[in-house]
Image (cartoon, rainbow, N blue to C red):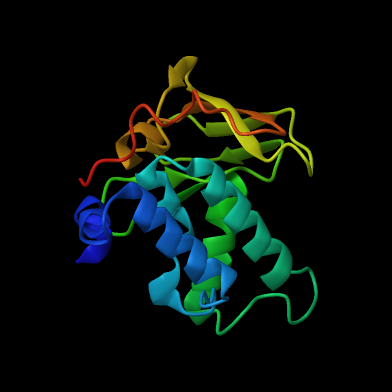
Length: 184
């Protein structure tokens, strides 16, 4: 299943740069349809190529162009909440790769979110320096420890604690490229 071997897909596409170019074309030519559930993961595939900044840009564009607080503000058929769940995860700053213990970091849209977890402390997600212009992650801390990667595990999140995003107006080339997500 392709989402479980994105590194293999990237190799088949000719490597990271060709993979990024294919994703760019896919979004620029408006082939992406957020209302089509099999494509939900596509905006976060940039993370595998070390370009989380493009994930942040793409997800923000999709949200601003496809979602609103109006009666028809959810694209497509919400199918038991799938379109709403896509939005909720991205607004918090991460998105799951289904069937894996993996969440790909996007970029949060809220200053603070608290998730009440069963049998664990709450997971508090805080975002520092967030604004309409500050959409790029400068660093991420999980329970005070800096993450040099653009992914989290379900195991890490279910422990609760503090997930802290620091944002800026320019991409930070020193963050996340050190350790792109491995197929798990």
